[in-house]
Length: 194
Length: 126
Image (cartoon, each protein chain N blue to C red):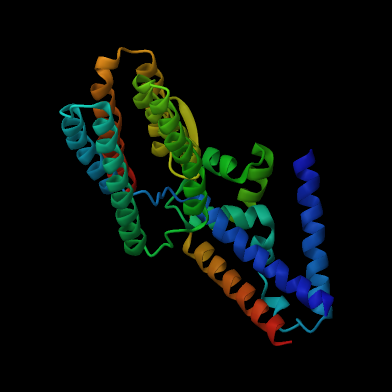
């Protein structure tokens, strides 16, 4: 009975190898370019709304609302793309990307609480951009080149924001969450479709 | 060197799998096995090309994580069998080698997939 199981396991291993090689070789990303562009557009609107808020607390709330809204847009657009291309949303690479992005988002949430309590609010935008970039780079390791490249741009912008005057905060947020999502979303649509 | 010895070990392992397969009532399935693409690296090349219109030598080398020598030996075997086609051209001053999967190669991969699936079904029914 043992050789029988061995042959069966080997055949399954071969099928798995073929699928994984095809996945690695395909210039496909589950990330929706149009979804990213929509997120960029809503981030620009959020920048305008946040800039008009009377307090920093309200500024943070505006961006938290934008963060939640963006998550919904990302989820919906990725699901649509997955259905259109008949690929499972949480395939090997999709699942890896999600698990790579989640830790930096959680870390960002916790640090926001800590820095707000410590009164170091001016570092929050830079920290958000930096941590989001980190998550996108690690998550993007399993995706097309445009994704980690976007993460790298977010990190560079975040690092710059941390050492810039607080008055430039809204510009950094607009260029980062607005501009970079629009730019890389357009690249994904053009080069990888959807 | 390490990669070559690993490849040899894999070939030996594959041969032993087939020996065991034949000795355990798989005589009906084993003769149809396409030995040419059963080898790991060649199977990888065919699979990668099946997912792309074409790939360069350098793309394949990075994907398969192998050496120039190893890749060219296996790619030539597939080319000789008519499973892949190869074209050489210059991009600026750089010479490029591009591979494409032929209709025969795609059909060979499809047959191999069916073969593996039927093998699994047979094992389950035993």
